[in-house]
Amino acid sequence: MAQKLWEKNIQVNDAIEKFTVGRDREMDVFLAKHDVMGSMAHITMLESIGLLTREELQLLLAELRSIYQMAEEGRFVIEEGVEDVHSQVELMLTRELGDIGKKIHSGRSRNDQVLLDLKLFTRAQLREVAEAVEELFSVLITQSEKHKDVLMPGYTHLQIAMPSSFGLWFGAYAESLVDDMQFLLAAYKMCNRNPLGSAAGYGSSFPLNRSLTTQLLGFDSMNYNVVYAQMGRGKLERNVAFALATLAGTLSKLACDACLFNSQNFGFVKLPDECTTGSSIMPHKKNPDVFELTRARCNKLQALPQQIMMVANNLPSGYFRDLQIIKEVFIPAFEEIKECLRMTTYIMNEIEVNKRILEDDKYLLIFSVEEVNRLAREGVPFRDAYKQVGLDIEAGNFTHNKQVDHTHEGSIGNLCNDKISALMQQVTTGFNFHQVEQAEKVLLGE
Image 1 (cartoon, rainbow, N blue to C red):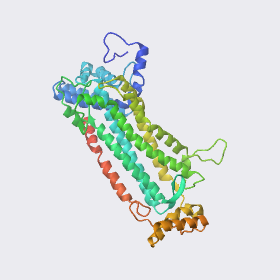
Image 2 (tube, rainbow, N blue to C red):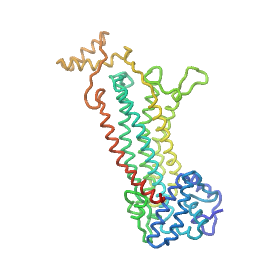
Image 3 (spheres, helix red, strand yellow):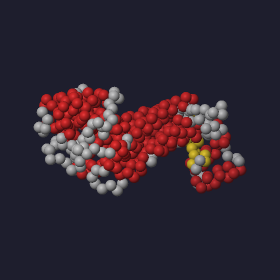
């Protein structure tokens, strides 16, 4: 059995070890390539301050790049008896390079290692989420333009209210994604600061060059205060979780609309047949299971910030093992939101729209406001026009040609999709993914 990094002469009871390690090995596999990347930056810095020779650095970098490739290909495993990803990487280096492998830990602690790993993992995941949001946004804008002239009822209190359009419906969710992307960008910016060099939370007596590791890893800046760097554990995950929850709220609402509009009582849209399931006893059923599960998963994701908050709340400054538990809910959340985004993008691209909804006279009354406004434009005082139309409705005499003429910004006839697209472009540019990409390529020797 491999010795723990912190172990001296007394071995830990097996039951205690199992309890304290928990699901850490499972979660740490997700962090493996990021741990390796952080080690490459750290040892490059160690060589620059004279704690490694040039030859030792080259040997370590070559071996770390090999381990990185294993992690990329899904071949990296944390062996039984090895506590975490940091221990596994150091063990692999020591097997291949002997005592040189033991030198990589100078000037750092597992505390700042895991902080760094989580930040590198999170910023990579946020990029994938942001790119998936862009894909859904593009589909929604395309559908909004395609169906901008197809009218549908708008609702308040689940009562038919005023004319809307599929252009407005698709476009509304597109613009909602712009605000969600703003949250993602804020989370990314908070994430993209370097904690490496904070060690156990109080710095190091080694003359570490933190500016160099910041540059090597493509961070925007460092977490300057070493105590705050450690205080960021839990706070980072909570803030990112709030961004994911905001996005999940948009997807959940869209899924709920689609489930309603797909039902026979509405009949506004038809979901792709391959995205529906049947009943074991009712042969006519086509259930919107994908969107029902999307709604449930996204509602679960909206509880994630509270879960993290309850673990991290009221902890004093400094490191505590409580924080390990956050990994178990935080790391899987990214794949869950990305799956929901992929499914929603597919369905929104394939969805069929009913272009003849308002031919049914049960929706006639949604044009009552149009008639009131028409009379007001002709000089009838608004309250008199309102009363006149109301009396016609009560008497069963209301009629309308079912045409609308909305021209102001953001209305049926002026969707402003170009403005919404420009806003999204402005936000996405702010991520500056290219900076990280270039830094990682240099470290990997590409």
